[in-house]
Length: 253
Image 1 (cartoon, rainbow, N blue to C red):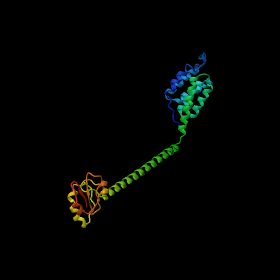
Image 2 (spheres, rainbow, N blue to C red):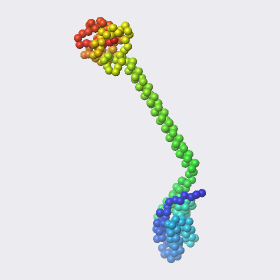
Image 3 (cartoon, rainbow, N blue to C red):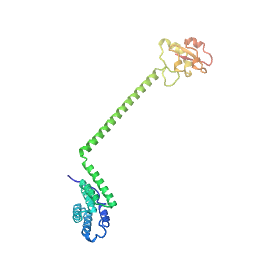
Image 4 (cartoon, helix red, strand yellow):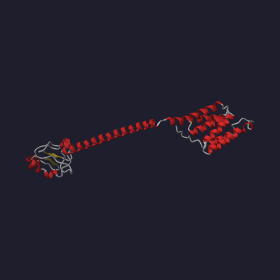
């Protein structure tokens, strides 16, 4: 299986340099010059982009000093960079068993184990699982889009029906004469002569509520200064025309 390198190259050499002052017990420097030389070699190889050679140098150091927690840790970092995530976590755990009271190194081991687990989890997520997740999200998006499209279509249909109903109501409702843009009730041919009698008054008639407009063929006297409920009842247009008081209006067909 192809391994994906974990990007730790910028951190690894600096941490190894930090170990040179702390890796060895006090007074043991002369006895472990070979380990120090191998650490330096590992730094150079890793910095040059040769992690295999760096790992080889660290493994040689561990053959000399198998209980060196520092070497186990940085070998784990090297394996992490190479994509061997399970081995990297195991090497960090091994380092923790030999660490003693080195809290700084313990913290780095904890980080290394967590990074190895995270990288392994991402590696084990197969393309099919990723595709399935994306397909499920796409399906949900498509369903939500369709639901909203249908809702918008229903709203548009309801709005159109409401506008049609409003237009029908406006065209059917009788309105006072003289109001621009509004139709008047149709008149039967027999009523045309009677309607002509009140034409002069209708041209300037006041606004009369629809509910108080006289029936087709009838007229009514309308006093502008009276409330609608106190107006005289409808009657014959000819008769009311003769009885029309001053200041009143004759409205009707």
